[in-house]
Image (cartoon, rainbow, N blue to C red; front, side, top):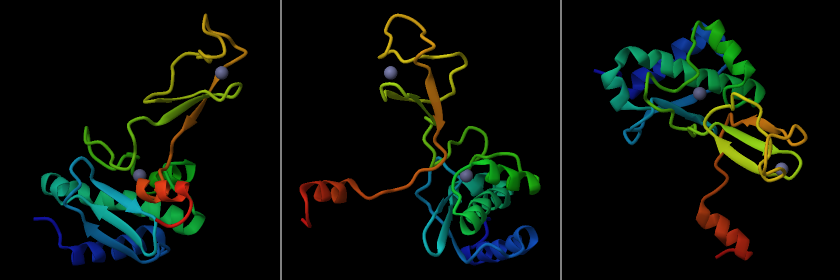
Length: 182
Ligand SMILES: [Zn+2]
Ligand SMILES: [Zn+2]
């Protein structure tokens, strides 16, 4: 049996006082049955919304508190510092709580709100960009600036994607591009 949503709300309140001095503002804690490959996620709105996968915790009930804590660290970073994603502040707080995983899941279950492609390699010379799953293990230069070989004049810069932000639907976007309400 997994806890009811009312119990989740109480668990949130307890963890908030135990680990965060009660500094996390009111959050809605909900189950979302549509999550199939993720354990939890946070939506940065007012009030903050934390959603957990009921399916996941029926299978791994012992992981619930840790996943909720993970999302609460996001909520805390956001409320105090407007900080999203898994940056240094997030990792430090996780360490303080004795948690290690920066993922929203267990084992091979993929995070929902993080693309499997986490890095952008960018040529600062010509602006060429490519998405990668991993950081390259060796020096890479821009294939557009020099097709033939590695060229240290055009090294690619590594950018890590640490948060995603919805900026509207494609419908709204097309409407805006046409200019005016539609
Ligand atoms: Zn996270
Ligand atoms: Zn280039």
